[in-house]
Length: 308
Image (cartoon, rainbow, N blue to C red; front, side, top):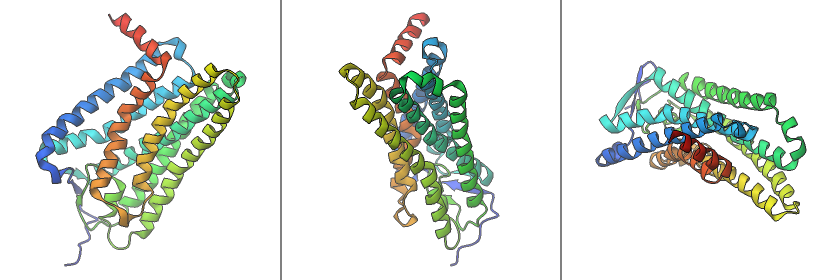
C-alpha cells in the first residue's frame, strides 16, 4: 500500500513512552518531581540574584536570563510528557505541534547563544579586568540578550515554517514532543533537503556559538596562566569551570541529536538524549552555579536567614 498524503489532517499522535508502558507511573513521579524541583531551583536563583544588590553585575544578569530560559524551555515540553505518561498516546493539533516546535527551538537556540554571551563576559572579566565594567555595560548586556532571542526566533521560524509547509504521510510521532527528527520521519517522499536544512541550521545554532565559547576560553586560559598569584588563578578557574560544565552538558547532548543524518536516527536514543537536554540540564544549571559559586551561596544563606 502506498502512503496517503495526510498534509490536511489537523492532528498528530504522540506515542511517547509507549514501549515501556509498565514504567509510566514511575516515570511520571520522577519527571514530575524533577520538574517541580527545577522550577523551584531556577526561580530561587533568579529571585536571590535580583534581590541582592551585590550580585547586580553582568555575570549574574546573564545567570538570571539562563534561569528564566530554563523555566520556559522546560515548561514547553514537560507538561505534555506528564500528560502522555498519565493517559498513554495523546493527540496534539497540527497548530499545537508547530507552536511547540517553534518555542522549543526558540528557547533552546536562545540558550545556546546565551551560553556564548556568558563565555564572552568571562573572557572580558579575566582578560580586561580594568575595563570590564566599561565594556560590559548595561546596554551591551541587554543587546547580547536581545541577540540571543533574535537568533532563537529566526531558527524557530525557519524550521517550523519549512517543516509544516511540507506534506505528511504519517500521523504517529514516535517521541514525547514535536521534535524535528521524528517529524522528518513522517514527511512524504525524499527528505534529503529537509535533513540538510536541519544540519545547516544546527551548524549555525550549535556549532557557531560553541566555537565562540572555545575561542573565549582559549583567551581565558592563556590569561589565567599568566597570572602571578596562585589564588587568582584558582578563583578564575573556579568561576569558569561552572560555565564550562554547563556548556559541555548542553552542547554535547544537543549536537548528538541535530548534527547527525536521518539514517542514524534511533527513536529510543533520541528520546534519551532529549530528556538529557530538556529535563536534566535545566535542573543541573542552578545546582552547578549555586554550589560552585561562593557569592551565590552567600546570597542564598542571607535570604534563608531573612525568611526565618
